[in-house]
Length: 449
Image 1: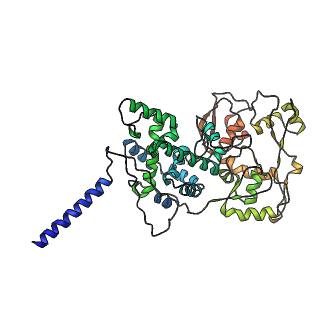
Image 2 (image 1 turned 90 degrees about the vertical axis):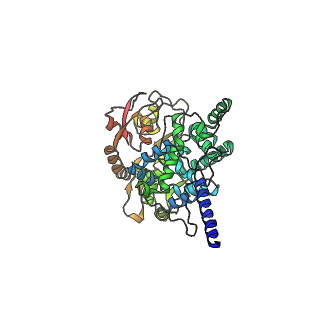
Image 3 (image 1 turned 30 degrees about the horizontal axis):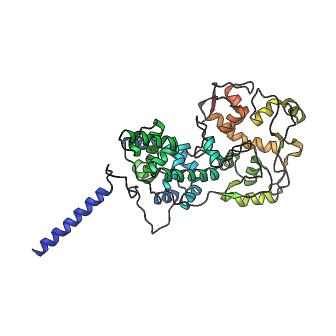
């Protein structure tokens, strides 16, 4: 009898434990979703295997379960190539972003947000004029001290924009008191979310995230993030193989004393211009100015860059900044510097209707003064030859990769569109059979995908 009683007690304890475990993972309407419900299984006895493992260990946003989450999970899982491309882009920035997230004590799910915002493309630009990995619109970018000027747009800077985005997200969480509402606010605006809550409360309706009426984009925003979290939490379940991303810094900031051309910096680092631009996408011009900017290089290329720089005897920049005289025309500036007006306009992204210069211009230094000499690499190479050699492969790739249309907006120039899609004005004109640089708003252009 004593054995039977003992057995009965043990069975009741097991059943109670199962019930409590089941209750822990069931979403109810009686209260907020608990933070423990994050699909997180952690082995803290070993250091993170890679960045994916490190991200999983820092989950702290409750899971969202809905039909939209299921839809977007299936959507992403059925597009493994797109996930691969996005993950390869992310590999350059994830270590820095997760480092900053952990330093602030924020949920590591936030490192997945640029997948939703920009597909981890630092050059992404939206119809609402949002730009960069974190898709800041101009006004919010200025509020969070992201410079946007003739030289650069820090909304595209991976370091500056990440700092601004995490500061903004921290504020939104404190403002809303809930990560679901904070993330909806990041997409829709905190004022819009607060007004939606107030409308519900005025009608005696719940004010939680899932009860709000939101625009379609915002309604899909958090489900997309949750879908990506589902896949990254258990990629094998969805037949996905994530590319390995080392839990080590991908890039390092390199100090320097003067202006440097993007092409020259790439040659000194023995890497492609395209790869260098992916780490330094904030710069609007082919020259990176020394003032108030950084040069980011792959960590493995830093010593190569320093070694080649030490043996470099040419000019670091083949461009110069020109301050026009009051009332000086573009025609006279172009003539005095040996280039055409069309080239001057293209280089500086000028509107075809402008005839008088009223701000700084970027001009090429005379070719005779622009030789690149690196004694460590043998004979001198002209800047023009270097540019042509490095541009040949990317431009050919761009020609093969044309896959979509771009509708010209008011204020667009061929130079600005070419920079946005990582190609040249001449290639853009060739693709679209254009005879001059004039483009009208509403025109459809073919651009690299």
